[in-house]
Image (cartoon, one colour):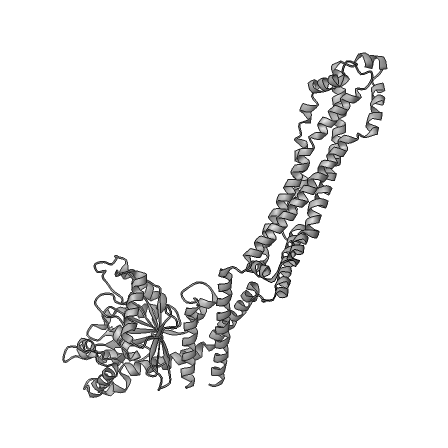
Length: 614
């Protein structure tokens, strides 16, 4: 195989592989950019301009649907692969992998059927391409894209937008700078009215990417010819015009062999008084060779940019493969090691959230600095220590014997009743921190890239972590309630010692005794209790956070998954493999990445070998 054939064949293989792997067809990524960087030939023409006949002449096979109106209703990406002279011809469709068509009448039927699968039995069009590869010793390596014929009027059964829809679809192909335009125009119509030339002039005003093909030369009125066009006087292009003579409808009806048709075409030009001097540069065989040679020169010029894109693709794919991870080993020891590594990765991210490397841990500080003080301030001490309630509690505590100096039992009951209110904020602080920790577990699992491929293990870690957090919360609640109960169970002695001294400061003790049921007396009791409760409140404001951090945050940092590790050690290989049951979507994604990576590395090696052979 020549260097040229190697280059074009390589591009064909890359384009086909890109399509197989889903890289073709738009999207801002390196893969679609690679497709667009690879040159191809788009066949453009109006309806009944002879597009299908030109393609069949190039292929040397009768395989395209025919009929009136819009026959080509989906783009057909046709890749020609030249094979050894002794090999058999066959065709393959992308949507029917591993099925070879040797009967080209069946190829035509499959194109019709596949078109109808997407568009239905209507005259609608679709931009979704059909991918067809033909392997034959009678073709040149080439990629051709057959596009729906341009039209000016919507026929019955078609929406009014069909004219614009077809033009938009065709433009999406021919506007690409690496697209070679094969503009088909019938010779029996004025070139000035050619839909293909009009569009080519708009997207390729210099004509550098356009090859003009003139069909139906044998159907021109007697006494006329197309020399002005073929010799570039009517409309000049950078590349020479090529005239072709397609099979007549009678030949098609009689299923005249394409080889015979090629011979008849060659004889027509050789014996034509008008075109005889151009015979060596006319016909479908010459057109195919001309396109192949031009394609080779374009590919050579694009090799640096293609190599750059392939290298970029390889880098991106290797990075993605690292994120997706390699396939899991089958032995239990390796699986256990993998699970432990994944747990450590999660635990590391969780600790980063708590310690400040990632956001979230600051919300725990917010519980202690804002929520707890606010809750303490809202406790109903004003109601509990109101004059009426103080009088009632003190009076009930005295019983039938009135207190003489200080109502000790009244004080104790008022203080104990007040301190009970601290249970609410204490428990609320525990619950608030528990909620933050649960949220950080959820976020940490989501941010552990290595875990994303194992939904079952994610669920197991989440369940184990939340179970541990529940245990930490229960212990924390017991601890903070103990703190409150300790304040209630033993009142500070100094507080009681100060009470007689304060009473003496008020004046004569006798007057204090006779004053024991006056309003000022009860107010003074309420004020004393309030002062003591304020002192306890400050103490609890400092000790509750310490208890919560010790019982919940510290334990979460040190032993969140300890129990889970213990359970893992008891599991057998089958149970471990079930935990490493990957998300099927990720498995498919890894498989596709591996295929792409293999494709691009092989393509890079082939391009390098072809480049060195120049």
